[in-house]
Length: 328
Image (cartoon, rainbow, N blue to C red; front, side, top):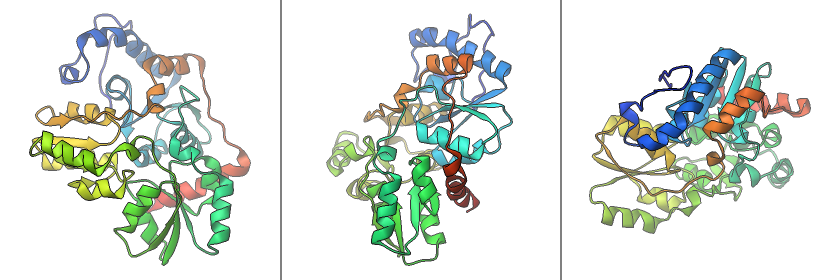
């Protein structure tokens, strides 16, 4: 939860000490007017900002009311006491928030904030997979469109994928769209998994050689990998888990030096909570997450744009897939 407060007019708002390690004071001077305006607009609109772990620190720590991975955001979206939800993340996250809050206004600050995974798989692809594997249930990663969720039996996130797969009580499942997540889950379970071949454009760039180079260049470093990374990267890591699980690991284990193999703003945001830990930062940026800025969050609240709408013919079916996940 963000708990910073600033003058309503945006003047003389000092850079909080805990953010000095990730936001230089000259940058803060550029951000403070928009932060103050957003905080005022949230009160006026009875709005909340939900921010994914990959958002930049000025958003994550400056204006967000709820922060976390996609599973936490999906859960918390059902509990918010607000008329307006601004989703500081990518489009499928805003769609999921709207699915779970059909009576609320859900805004995405930039319609072009997409996802390579969500774009890699269509509803027609799901139907084709079902035709090839009759009777096999479909587990759809939350990083999918509403149309794909509507074709699935249940959704999952990187944080609960194994639990979702095993909850079905079957010997074989289809899992889509992330091939690497499916292969990493398959290595942990006896359930046979047929995977789609979608990849995250951030995580697929990490390699086992990268891990070995990091260890050579930073002796004693603890390597944490996201399960969207290739299996050979996960095999080289000390721990693999969702962004929430990686953050929890850092807090529980308190390694002296750590590297998070995921989108690079994640390290900035976790580092604020643990200033005594050295974070090595191999910076792979998500161009879609970076489309969300303080200025377009402010614009979204000022103009009520861009409002997320969902085809009613898909909404009920897609909502069931998400709610089955949340019920676990």
